[in-house]
Image (cartoon, rainbow, N blue to C red):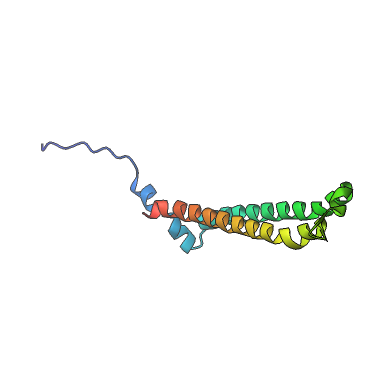
Length: 122
Protein backbone atom coordinates (compact mmCIF):
# COMPACT_ATOMS: atom_id res chain seq x y z
CA UNK A 1 0.00 0.00 0.00
CA UNK A 2 1.48 3.38 -1.03
CA UNK A 3 2.24 5.87 1.69
CA UNK A 4 -0.34 8.67 1.81
CA UNK A 5 0.41 12.18 2.99
CA UNK A 6 -1.88 13.85 5.44
CA UNK A 7 -3.37 17.12 4.30
CA UNK A 8 -4.76 19.63 6.73
CA UNK A 9 -7.79 21.51 5.46
CA UNK A 10 -8.18 24.94 7.01
CA UNK A 11 -11.24 26.14 5.12
CA UNK A 12 -13.77 24.53 2.90
CA UNK A 13 -13.82 25.28 -0.81
CA UNK A 14 -17.48 26.25 -0.57
CA UNK A 15 -16.71 28.93 2.00
CA UNK A 16 -13.79 30.25 -0.04
CA UNK A 17 -15.98 30.39 -3.14
CA UNK A 18 -18.66 32.37 -1.27
CA UNK A 19 -16.18 34.99 -0.01
CA UNK A 20 -16.31 37.76 -2.57
CA UNK A 21 -14.37 41.00 -2.53
CA UNK A 22 -16.24 44.05 -1.27
CA UNK A 23 -15.76 45.82 -4.59
CA UNK A 24 -17.71 43.03 -6.32
CA UNK A 25 -20.48 43.39 -3.74
CA UNK A 26 -20.71 47.10 -4.55
CA UNK A 27 -20.55 46.61 -8.30
CA UNK A 28 -23.27 43.95 -8.30
CA UNK A 29 -25.43 46.05 -5.95
CA UNK A 30 -25.93 43.15 -3.56
CA UNK A 31 -27.35 43.42 -0.05
CA UNK A 32 -23.84 43.50 1.41
CA UNK A 33 -22.87 46.28 -1.01
CA UNK A 34 -25.96 48.20 0.06
CA UNK A 35 -24.82 47.94 3.67
CA UNK A 36 -21.39 49.35 2.76
CA UNK A 37 -22.96 52.23 0.84
CA UNK A 38 -25.44 52.92 3.65
CA UNK A 39 -22.51 53.23 6.05
CA UNK A 40 -20.77 55.68 3.73
CA UNK A 41 -23.92 57.74 3.30
CA UNK A 42 -24.54 57.71 7.07
CA UNK A 43 -21.02 59.05 7.71
CA UNK A 44 -21.47 61.75 5.07
CA UNK A 45 -24.86 62.73 6.49
CA UNK A 46 -23.46 62.93 10.02
CA UNK A 47 -20.67 65.22 8.79
CA UNK A 48 -23.12 67.41 6.84
CA UNK A 49 -25.49 67.77 9.77
CA UNK A 50 -22.62 68.57 12.13
CA UNK A 51 -21.27 71.36 9.92
CA UNK A 52 -24.79 72.68 9.35
CA UNK A 53 -25.62 72.63 13.07
CA UNK A 54 -22.41 74.43 14.04
CA UNK A 55 -23.03 77.07 11.37
CA UNK A 56 -26.66 77.54 12.43
CA UNK A 57 -25.73 77.82 16.10
CA UNK A 58 -22.98 80.35 15.43
CA UNK A 59 -24.97 82.40 12.95
CA UNK A 60 -28.21 82.10 14.90
CA UNK A 61 -26.41 82.89 18.13
CA UNK A 62 -25.17 86.27 16.91
CA UNK A 63 -28.54 88.05 17.25
CA UNK A 64 -28.89 86.49 20.69
CA UNK A 65 -25.44 87.79 21.62
CA UNK A 66 -26.37 91.23 20.31
CA UNK A 67 -29.46 91.36 22.50
CA UNK A 68 -27.82 89.90 25.62
CA UNK A 69 -24.69 92.07 25.39
CA UNK A 70 -25.75 95.58 24.36
CA UNK A 71 -22.13 96.73 24.22
CA UNK A 72 -21.72 94.71 21.02
CA UNK A 73 -24.46 96.70 19.30
CA UNK A 74 -23.02 100.05 20.34
CA UNK A 75 -19.37 99.28 19.53
CA UNK A 76 -18.13 100.94 16.36
CA UNK A 77 -15.07 100.09 14.27
CA UNK A 78 -14.09 102.59 11.57
CA UNK A 79 -17.48 104.22 11.98
CA UNK A 80 -19.39 100.98 11.32
CA UNK A 81 -21.22 99.03 14.02
CA UNK A 82 -19.70 95.76 15.21
CA UNK A 83 -22.82 93.75 14.26
CA UNK A 84 -22.36 94.86 10.64
CA UNK A 85 -18.73 93.79 10.73
CA UNK A 86 -19.67 90.41 12.15
CA UNK A 87 -22.60 89.74 9.83
CA UNK A 88 -21.36 91.50 6.72
CA UNK A 89 -17.66 90.75 6.72
CA UNK A 90 -16.53 88.06 9.15
CA UNK A 91 -19.25 85.57 8.21
CA UNK A 92 -17.67 84.94 4.81
CA UNK A 93 -14.24 83.79 6.01
CA UNK A 94 -15.99 81.62 8.60
CA UNK A 95 -18.20 80.09 5.90
CA UNK A 96 -15.12 79.49 3.73
CA UNK A 97 -13.32 77.73 6.59
CA UNK A 98 -16.40 75.61 7.34
CA UNK A 99 -16.69 74.64 3.67
CA UNK A 100 -12.98 73.80 3.50
CA UNK A 101 -13.28 71.65 6.63
CA UNK A 102 -16.31 69.89 5.15
CA UNK A 103 -14.60 69.10 1.85
CA UNK A 104 -11.47 67.76 3.56
CA UNK A 105 -13.44 65.64 6.03
CA UNK A 106 -15.71 64.36 3.27
CA UNK A 107 -12.71 63.41 1.14
CA UNK A 108 -11.14 61.63 4.12
CA UNK A 109 -14.35 59.62 4.67
CA UNK A 110 -14.45 58.63 1.01
CA UNK A 111 -10.77 57.63 1.03
CA UNK A 112 -11.31 55.47 4.12
CA UNK A 113 -14.28 53.84 2.39
CA UNK A 114 -12.27 53.22 -0.78
CA UNK A 115 -9.41 51.70 1.25
CA UNK A 116 -11.84 49.44 3.12
CA UNK A 117 -13.40 48.28 -0.14
CA UNK A 118 -10.00 47.74 -1.74
CA UNK A 119 -8.69 45.59 1.15
CA UNK A 120 -10.39 42.47 -0.16
CA UNK A 121 -9.77 43.29 -3.81
CA UNK A 122 -6.01 43.60 -3.51
